[in-house]
Image 1 (cartoon, rainbow, N blue to C red):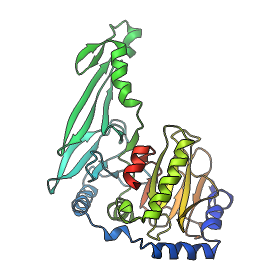
Image 2 (image 1 turned 90 degrees about the vertical axis):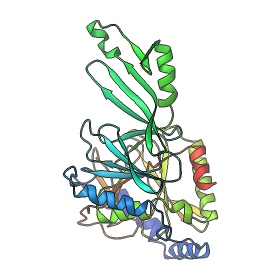
Image 3 (image 1 turned 135 degrees about the vertical axis):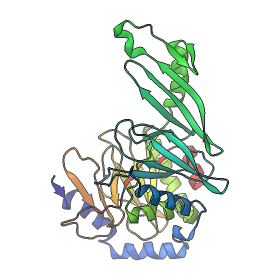
Image 4 (image 1 turned 180 degrees about the vertical axis):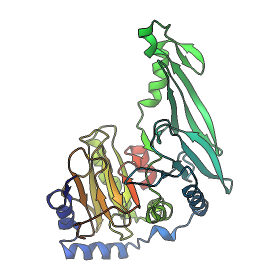
Length: 354
């Protein structure tokens, strides 16, 4: 696999973020003036129980070593909108593999149960619903679940055997185990599936640096960001959403280790969709000179501060915001998927940034 060091990603990032020493000083003084502090200073009760569970799983027979963004992975997401994120462990991305969800409820770690498929969970953020589906020989059956009071609750079940039509089967559509017309079926199903969704469960590998970042940094950015930073993020996202489609997403990640997050905007989920990266400086967001990744996402090495293309179809690209040389770079075991933590909607932006 050819590695593109100069023209594609590395030099562009270096020119924007390390080639202008004055700009670095401005960023540092702005952070100090706004009293932006490290998210590590914010502690949550769920952090240590989740750390213990991850350590326990990593020593179990179900754990698979990572080789790039592969093997066993995990995620931290608030699936029930109660302000406390759930821990999602994905043993692998093999066909049929379900994720196990844990929550911190009533002061203790609680196992919610298993759901999803192929190591992922399809999550409809606005509705708070997860899809659990099984495709059999000529039929499909599934349900939409939510988490409430530390347990799964089924919102709707469905079944259809339309793929058996060629075999002469009598076609049947069911909602909540009751036969319905095709129109009724589609109204119920599409009423959910037409909403923005995210694939969750496989965001972080089990490397030490990534586990530390996921538990002690990733969920604290909105608590430590200054008012002007939040305003800049909100204004930028509002403008980007106005000119984009419905599959856009975003997230905040510290990509250069300065305790100040970068804004990542994912343009969608098709092969041609990339991510745009914005650095906050002196009340403004400065965009990198190029777009990065495919399918609206890219990988990031938390230990070495290097980002890379996930499953590249042609050339694998590497880049860094630290200005470090990438010659001879090899990935660590502390990797994460970037770009699609939150759906880019007015509701989500308002909830995070006011």
